[in-house]
Length: 135
Image 1 (tube, rainbow, N blue to C red):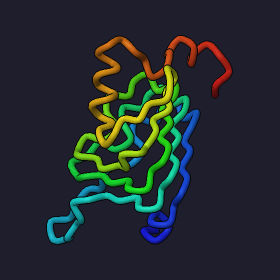
Image 2 (cartoon, one colour; image 1 turned 135 degrees about the vertical axis):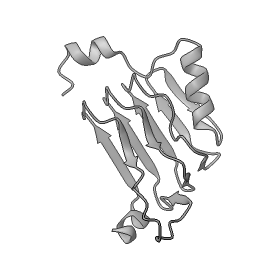
Image 3 (cartoon, helix red, strand yellow; image 1 turned 180 degrees about the vertical axis):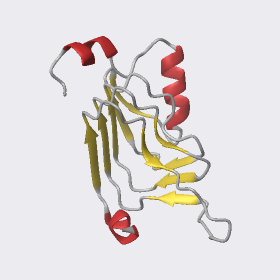
Image 4 (tube, rainbow, N blue to C red; image 1 turned 60 degrees about the vertical axis):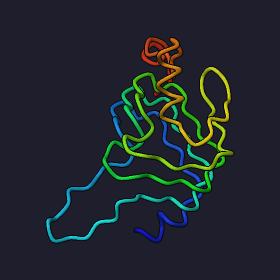
């Protein structure tokens, strides 16, 4: 499975009403040596669409790296609070596509999400999602 993730170039997840997180941190065995970094080295496009309960892509303690990411789409995800809870590393050239426009956010997606939410922007309209045929 690890080899498949290493080669993954595109990932699109949509219309999963109850999904709260995409990558879940595994329970660690005391004796197991576990990497402190989760990496998707070949992922170029990540699309998260119509995920009404999504809190974040990865909620865990490890660092997260997406060095080849060109495009990140977050649309109709009204509950999103962070992209990753830990430190995330992405290309400075990554374009974030949202319901309210496209942005080059540099390397800090979490700060962008937090700032936009504080400014009153929404990453989706829950009423619209619940009352239309998105699912």
